[in-house]
Length: 109
Image (tube, rainbow, N blue to C red; front, side, top):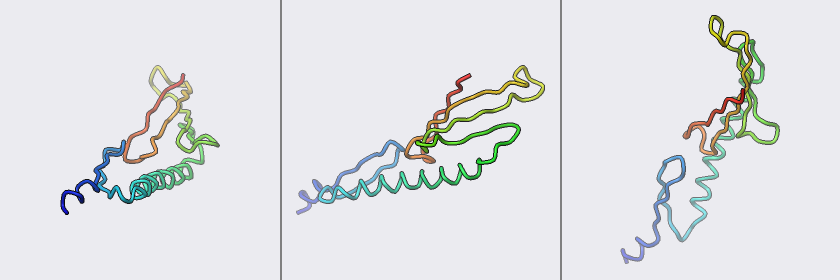
C-alpha cells in the first residue's frame, strides 16, 4: 500500500546542505552516498596538494602528513603594507564535504 511505502522513504540532509531521499529498507544507500562525497573531497584535496607542492616566495601550503583535511600555510606580508616582510602562519580545516562546504581558516600568528 502507499502508506507503507511512505514509511520506507526517508529524506536526509547531510551537513553540506544537500537532501538525499533513500529507502529505509536499504540504509546502505545513505552510507554509500556519504562515502562518495568523502571520496570527492579526497580526490580534490590530493589534486590541490599536488598543485601547491612547490612553495613560492609568497606562500606555502600543504596538508598534515596524517590528515588530508588539515592544512598549514605560511604567507608573506604584502609589499607596501604594514605587514611587509612578515611571515604569517595559519591552519585550514576542511570539512569532509569539501568543496561543497567551505574550509575554516585560522591565522595562528
